[in-house]
Image 1: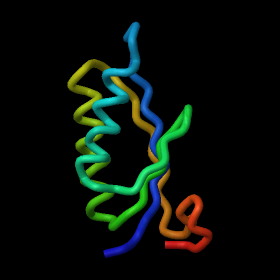
Image 2 (image 1 turned 180 degrees about the vertical axis):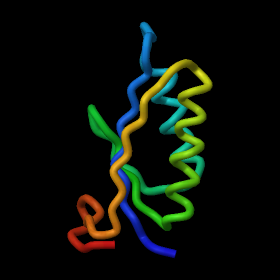
Image 3 (image 1 turned 90 degrees about the horizontal axis):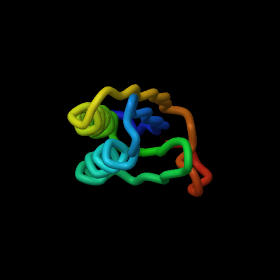
Image 4 (image 1 turned 90 degrees about the vertical axis):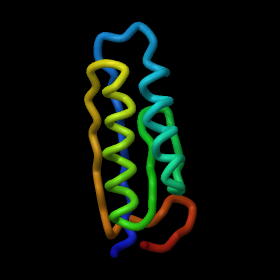
Length: 88
């Protein structure tokens, strides 16, 4: 088990209101208990690799249940957690 950081961007396609799909994805990340920081264009999460990958799968499924979506994820075991100063 490794500590990893993932930056996630979600792009709902063909929707007038993007919030339901994005809110569903963020809700899934929260349901998994991951630390997260959400910005205007992406969300960064940190945690155990198995937990992060499981949360990402559920986040995509939550968004995709509301329509077509693209999710872009960058995963690292070398990036420090924002605001903590050290690497995970």
